[in-house]
Image (cartoon, rainbow, N blue to C red; front, side, top):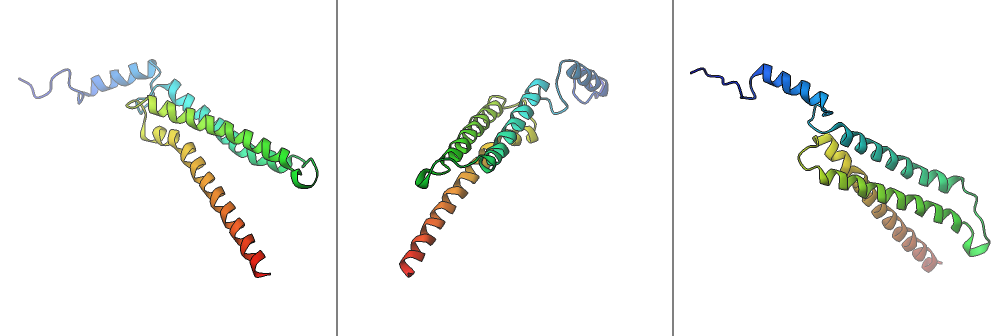
Length: 143
């Protein structure tokens, strides 16, 4: 008996054949399908675009209206783009969730990143809003 059998994964010829057949079948080096990796990157880039554009749109849109409601149109555009980022982040997370064993570690982290960043950003917005409210309240009581 020999120490190496033909079907073992440590056989270099077998590994080379498996790599070649994997490349022909559209599988990346990490073992994930190329279409899934491309979908992950496209969704991530779309999320990045929508996230950045929500702030750009808010900054460049002219405020309309008068007195109390002046500029509310800017807020509507910002929230619409943020809704798009939430949908894209949830979709990206779902793609990562549906591929439990086929994704590399970096792709799996990439599918979770937008949802985590959105959660952190909204928590920061809420904390900033509470802080400004309390500072304004303290200032009015000091006068």
